[in-house]
Length: 465
Image (tube, rainbow, N blue to C red; front, side, top):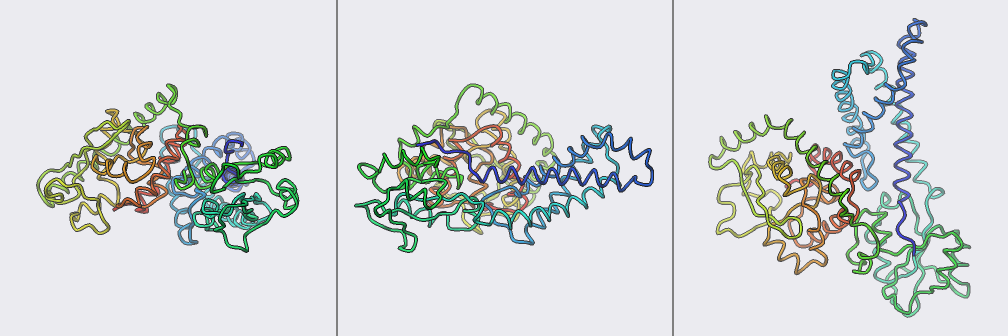
């Protein structure tokens, strides 16, 4: 079978980003023309220097939109939520441009041109988004997918990818039952092969991709017919790769050790380690340089409310199972864990102080962990570190849990963006799906994307408890 190809969702998002870069670029050029159309000579000189400045505006605004989650394929936004995020993106992007203009004066666009650009650009983005929703929600442009299998594994697609936003770039044409295996899928979704072969069925239904999802592989796969499908230009992928590509997770119910071994990823090469360490030092150092006055204020607030220690230290499990000391601002009472018994935090936990609830919601309690990143115990991006007591329990109860410790734990991570705060074995299992996806696919660009989208989590309070 072919390895998982780059998701069509990624291509759609790149196309959307490129379209909005073009719209913002055109908005700046139009603003420059409007601002100086009564002064032809000055207008010509100004427009000669405008293109690279227009590109700078487009990159700043789309970068801010990324930070506010407007290029995420797995999140549904209400109309008001989208407008709020778009407004905040333009505000943040505008502030970033002003700071850059101060640092690099030749890039200055002018207040009038910048204001007109942002106004035109915002309107243009709204038009693009409206057209995008109508265009890409049409089945005509979606990839047509046929599932080989109709049992428990195949039905995971219906139970785990049932939202419309989960299927933006593909449509499931049907499920082909495998002879001798139980059927879990609804009868109206079944597509029996009949006398025609699988390759003839895919040709008749104009299938773009065949997903292999039987409950039992041995002796149950029509390999010759699958080979003919490949020869017809149809992509053939297994269920685990399909979930990894389309849902950004490793589906634990469908994956087996051989897939983890042979499906690629897990880049621990020296260049990757060096690039990740450089990214950690740069990101943690920059954030520490900016946030140290805020850390002083938080420390004073913690001490003034309840006295006692400002910081709280715990032993956590890091890369390859090594233990290290993690330090946070104290957000709970001093006697929160009587007898030293580890207890998961819960919603509206009565052990939290008033200041503690605020700093946990805004993630300010995590700032001292920047020292652990600089020290090398943690990375800026990675699976969140757990306490040894929880790790021992979860290793026994959750399959593949130990795989997440093949990289350094992080201050933020893919699971924190995709799943709310977890406080149970069930939650740990759900988050592991996203942690394994990160461990398998981590890279410098992925880390940067997670870092930008963490801004959304902090500002909108998702996942905090």
